[in-house]
Image 1 (cartoon, rainbow, N blue to C red):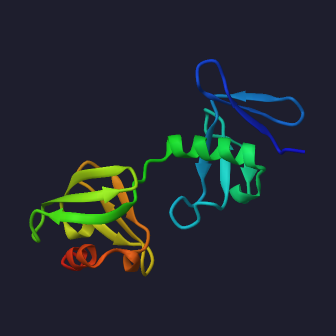
Image 2: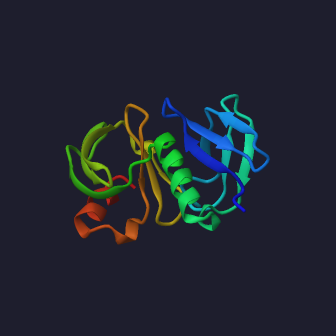
Length: 154
């Protein structure tokens, strides 16, 4: 038995149906730890912000439901992952960075070194001047040029 059903309504919004037939409209999916444990816990929340269903591990859902939950999560979250640093306008801040992300090439302005936070030994979170957050998932896995540019700011 599936713990719940997640479908889009006629307006493209997510609707959750529990096994007892109770329907909840305008639900959203929220990860517990989107950076450190992206496949871990997630909650299905009502439009009022109340938890309806808790999922311990997204990976444990059957394939169809997991696909729906991941799609709902991805629509809500925006955390581009930096794959490569192509150029930096200046080693003094503010500076303009040109980067390749998992969503394409983009430019952003880094106001100061304090906008680069190390979450773990290899995971960095970078805030641009407009408040958009970018993640470097594995600093050690980046190419030599990217690491060299980053070393100037760390």
